[in-house]
Length: 202
Image (cartoon, rainbow, N blue to C red; front, top):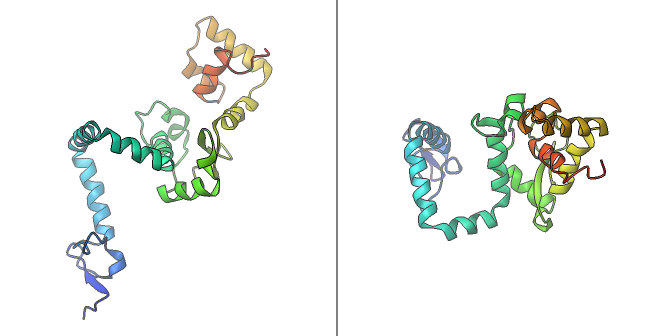
């Protein structure tokens, strides 16, 4: 017998509570689990259509996009980190996903950290893994200022390594991306070193 607080999913045919259904001016016919599975499958089979729709939407509503980004900065950080871990075409994948770093957080976790660390008061907040050898987890992540995050990479390198990086780059023997892999640091850090934006005293 179906009660007022229960509903039968038309997809999996299981009887579930109303909390297991999305409420969009009336509860959906499919439960949340079935909807997520359907959306995941649809995203894979209709990738081209989704990208075209997204382009048209951004072009038609640029102000809405800007406003959303301004009010959901934690979401931007989440999607960027997720891309670094899961998208092989991302230019930073080699430093994250290729090294086994996994995204084990949700967008709600990023929002929680954003307000916990008061990232909204920072000039340029970035998500930081406290232990760079571990995954993106709630226990291992925090929002800090970008310059502090950059200094973490700097502290890993020695004076001799910095001199060698500049020498190899100046002789045009190795490009920045390969130098980053060779010295186990970020490409941004290598760029700052070769352009004398960091380690200026050497």
